[in-house]
Amino acid sequence: MGLKGSCIVAQSGGPTAVINASACGVVQEAMKHGEIEGVYGAINGVLGILNEEIFDFREESPDDIEGLKYTPAAALGSCRYKLKSLEDSREDYARIMEVFKAHNIRYFFYIGGNDSMDTADKITRLSKEMDYEMRVMGIPKTVDNDLAFTDHCPGYGSIAKYNATAVMEAGRDTDAIYTTDTCTIFEAMGRNAGWIAAATALARREEGDAPHLIYMPEAAFSIEQFVKDCKEVLSKFGRIFIVAGEGLKDASSEYITAATGEFARDSFGHVQLGGVADILKQIIEKEVKVKARWNKLGTCQREAMHFASKTDRDEAYLCGQMAVKHAVEEDVTGKMVSLVRESDEPYRCTTGLVGLAQVANAEKPVPREWINESGNFVTEKFIRYATPLIQGEVEVPIENGLPRYIRLKRKPIPKKSPLR
Image 1: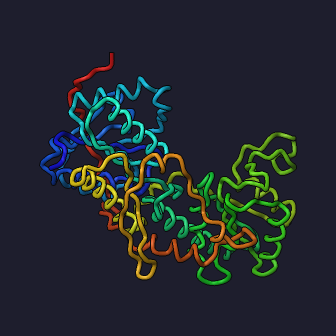
Image 2: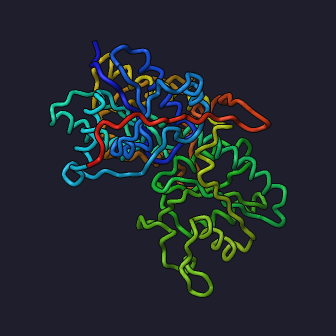
Image 3: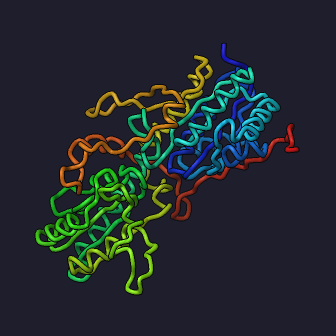
């Protein structure tokens, strides 16, 4: 018999195409268990708990809850509010527990990345310290795919699929007018890890296809080697398509965007404030002497549900569902649901559990052996890893030629513990 009481689910950090699928998994599974008396959502993550801005999922229509499976971004509302240590943010943590007690919250499901898992871990410890019985579970979310102790992370498969497609299509543009726009640089998200940049390799099916070169933070970037690489590709194909992770670092582990060298300043001596693609453009035009342009997708790439991976969506839902099952049926607390790969061909993946504290204090880079020796492309090991994650397409309802996404009502429930 599980712990009796209500549950609350919250979302945190940068949204993804499938973070709502995880919330749907939590809500639909929670409603199957009689022990869970109320199924609540926090508006804007942990801020919603601190401000006691909570809504009742039982007041939402079942169709809208089901619609979370094909709706991108964070339908509950997200935040980037970082709680510090228990000592430094004691007041905030005490407030969270005060709200939980007021609404008899006995289950807390937090969907997010490293910082969210750290917050959930601290709430787990505080609840034990205060002798308040509850179950706290983390559900992984990040497009960066840099959470440790999970084979991959919900959100990654969809951004990988979208970026690979964008590179495939933009590469055809470069093919078509290489006599004028000879080089294209595609800047990918990923400040400290190159998983998103690496995924664009999936676009390359023939030797001349884009991308020709991929640079990631895990392999030290050298301007001299970069110029050599570009000249070799230009000699072979007459054009160059480059993918660069936004967090490229030199041999001293300094971001190249923070460099003070020749290419970090304009002709007036002003420090360049652009991203890595702009710096690479300057290098190419000066040293390789061809015209270059750059593309940067921004937030649209992490919300692209219209071409999301069905595998990613289904696994996101599974993580939410299993968080509830473990908490209610097995009395598990202080854990994050992880994805465990059983095989590549055929692809099989199941779930596991990992301690919240372990995830909070770790980061997973692309293994160096998955990057070629020159540091300018991935190896076949990465291709085998990533290919299964982009399979299938999510069926999205279309209305007047455009996707029809749902919007939750999020009607706040009465406050029982107003801020003093």
